[in-house]
Image (cartoon, rainbow, N blue to C red; front, side):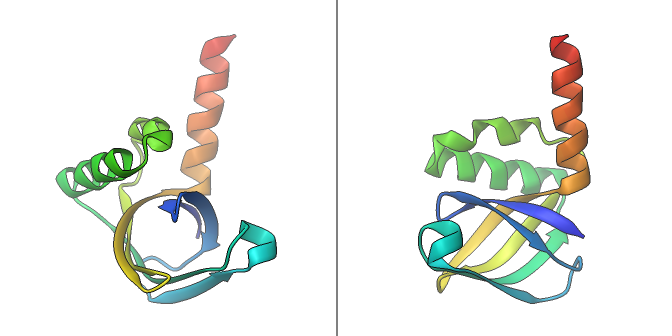
Length: 108
């Protein structure tokens, strides 16, 4: 499944993962402006854990306030970014597209 992982060293990173299976992804300096290595798993989370992960992410980087609007699958990434342990919110491409289209249609 294709997903966005939010606040990966301040960036939103698109990756392809299999839910619950370990993966490793490398984003080059050319692609991301700096080398980023992501390794861990994307898994389903409880509503409480997902909300806590979103709020922790926003507390660390307020640029990600819009992720509070995620209401579909509650996914989180657990693992390491450049060797640092993290827990970050994740959104599937499909859920992002639906949320984006719902927002655009509401604005009409």
